[in-house]
Amino acid sequence: MAQKLGLALVAGFVTAAVIDFVVLLTTGMSAAVLLSSFLGGLVAGSFFIEPIKGGGKAGITIALVDALLVRPSIAMLLYQMGVILLPEEPLPGTELSNIPFLIVAMLVSLAIELSIGFGGGFVGAYLRKTLAPVKPRVTPGVCPYCGAKVPPEAVYCPYCGAKLKEA
Ligand SMILES: [Zn+2]
Image (cartoon, rainbow, N blue to C red):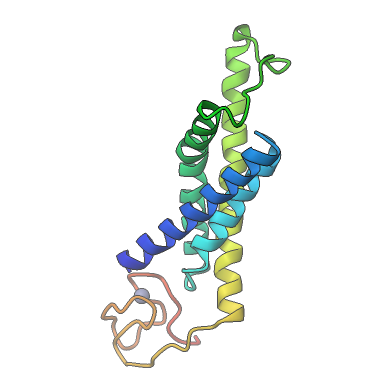
């Protein structure tokens, strides 16, 4: 389970970073960067089939790290290479006197980004489940999704929350 999580996150981060790179190079810091949260989340989420909201959580993680760490690093790198320019004029309403406004605006945009990451992860898990359903190996007492030992009568896996039986 931990291994799958690691793989999902790495795949999601790489996807998000590649899209950040392409978007920053072509359109600069525009709303198109939100694509990276969505698609990064989607890729990470596609590793999670049950429960679907597990995919959403992976998507949120991707969006958070991408927005706070990966994308700023890529933007800085491209800027230092002289490939992109940072906006010279501050955007309207972003003067230093407006710091409370700026903080609120940042939090709002982060919240939007996290929701988009969650959505991407959720859609990824849903698509994966719909398009390539995993045939659970039916071994009584073992969760087919995470491999944990579960009580044979369990309807839901107590470890990963997957549905084990039709109730
Ligand atoms: Zn399980």
